[in-house]
Image (tube, rainbow, N blue to C red):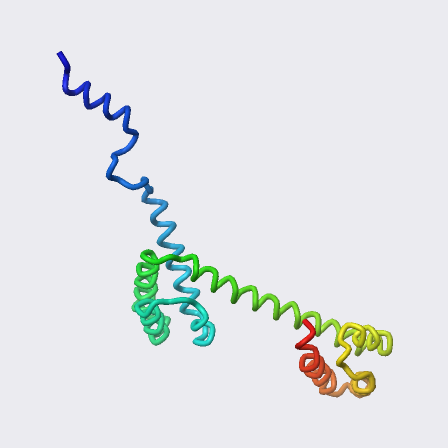
Length: 183
């Protein structure tokens, strides 16, 4: 005599989950995924048009982002539009979008590091003179020694007179223009 309820239990023990269901995802995990999609959507909305063109987006998502940029950020409609963008993102492969955002972030960090290096070089030339000029010429051979010395003298004159740092700014621009290809 086979009890039908025992048969169901035996089948349940053999099958850990229902065969026609995908892997179980908790409600909390779904909320985390939704928040992540909305956060990525918000990052996309905050990008400039030029940067946005470098990210692989389909027409529907690009249109939703363009609409979000037109909406006043202080209004409730903007928040709802961000939620809608997050909803659209849930149905898409996020890997190319995240890769594009990471690439933009790395470019930004590299540019900041380059500017900090140029600022250090400028400060060294302004403070130390010939030794720093020689180091700058070793690092960037396209620079002109005479031009750097002129900037150094002009900066010292400005500092002595408590004048605005015009030559100091010009030195940075000169370094920026003549060192772009070496990095």
